[in-house]
Image (cartoon, rainbow, N blue to C red):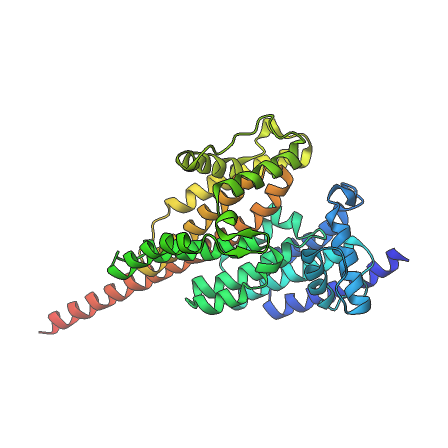
Length: 393
């Protein structure tokens, strides 16, 4: 019966796919890639690997089924409950397997693509990166919450970066505070750093910079749940979580673990962790074919990151927006690099951040190029008009 239910679900998703093709008037190449993405769903779980390889898929399935059947949150976990409730709202006919959740994720992925196209955040580089990025195709074809995170991050950062509406963008990003709070906090931190670094350093900025440590010192004894504010945002607390996550990955608190060792050592560890997060697993660290493919992808993405940042831009507005993107990437990669040691978890967290970063960077580069061409053309037309006027005199 599961096969029949999934077949009905597939028919529903194919209808959505055909509607998108007609609505966007997609060409054959883009349409074929999207169709291959749909096929990928049925080549992963129970074919290339057993669903238990990523066991949290079953928790999202159970939470979605419970909410669809009862319209109540399950007693599984806060993140799984919210994710399940959001999945259940997608009108897929049946929720009976991990492939069902994967098909919901395909619909969400397709929705993001439609959003980018209709909002004109689209050119060949944006479209083909979004359609061909291997990790994006992999993790949005599984029964995981990462596609929901991608959905809210893409729309919120579009509002912040493209539309320059920071407050509205942060409101749209609020679900991230429940789905993946670290991503929400990293957007806030990146915005704060960007506001300080962009533009001239004036008295107002200096006052704000001075008030932040003063406010922290005053409020550090404020109790939040079981800990004070100072305990939450302390080096000791960070070290505790790093040690725990290292133990969760290796089963040993000491073997190979590199402690931060103090505030003076934090910048060095942070830079080192940033590159580790971008590159691991390296080819010789891969223990299976999936990790080997991911390691090669990591090398390609780092090369692409360098090439994108070597591209010259002319518009001041575009330069500011690209500065924010780079701050956001540095903040997110550093935070995750410090805290995440598992290769699989790193790949899952990394692909969303890189997808957002490159989509908006490719869009901004294309937009800047268009502005430059229009400016050059306008100058040439004005020069031509002046020449004609001078000749007539």
